[in-house]
Image 1 (cartoon, rainbow, N blue to C red):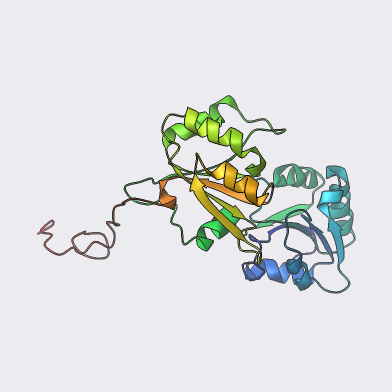
Image 2 (cartoon, rainbow, N blue to C red):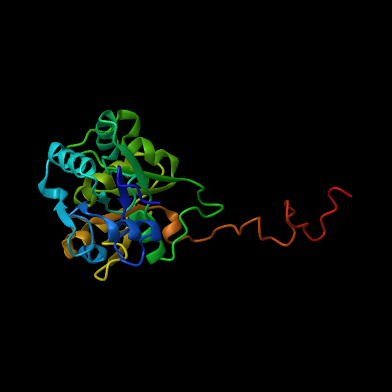
Length: 263
C-alpha cells in the first residue's frame, strides 16, 4: 500500500521501459512529485507519470535542494519519489538522502530495480558465474574524483581473476586496462565487453580483449553511460556443466542415477 507520509526511492531498471517492476510503475503513476536522474534515466519512463506530476531533474539540483523538495512534498501530504536509474543499492547516494530525511522523522522506503549490469548481461545472453571459470562477480568503479580505498584498487581486485564489472568508468578505460594487467592474473587476451546504454533502443555492445578494447571504444566515441565487463565468462574456451542438473548428482529433491549413497 502506498503511503503519502513516506519518501520512496525507486529503481527505474536499466533503461527499457518494460524492465521496471510493477511496484515501481505503480508509484510513478501515482506520484505527485518525481525527482529523477536526468543524466541517466531513460525519459520514456516518465511517460508513466500523471499529467499534473511535478518533475525535477536531479542533475540540475544540489543535495540540499533535493532534500528540501522531498521534505516539503511529504509534509504537504504529496506522494514524492526519488527515481533512480538501475537499482538504488548501487552508486546512488541514497544513504545520505535517507539519513537526512529520517532525522526529520520522514519515513523512507526503497523499491529495488534491475541494475544495468544485469540488463547488460541479459542483452549478451551472458552468465557471469560459470562453473569451472568463476563463481564470483566483483562490482566496482575506477578511481577519479571519488576516492577508492587502497584495498580496493583495481590491481588488487584483479588478483582474484573473477568476473569484474565497472560502473561509471568507461572514460578511464586505458588506465583500467593497465591496472587489470598489474594484478598478474588477467592477460592482454582476457575478454572484455563494453555495453553502452544497456537495454535502451540505441544499445551498443563492443567486445574485445584487455589489449584491444580501448581502441574500439575510442573509435565508437563512447565516453559515458556504458558498463565494462571483464572476464573469461564473456568468451569461454570451456566450462563445466552444473552439478545440480547432472543426472548422476544427488540432491535434496532428486536421487542421481547410479548413486548408491544412503542405501
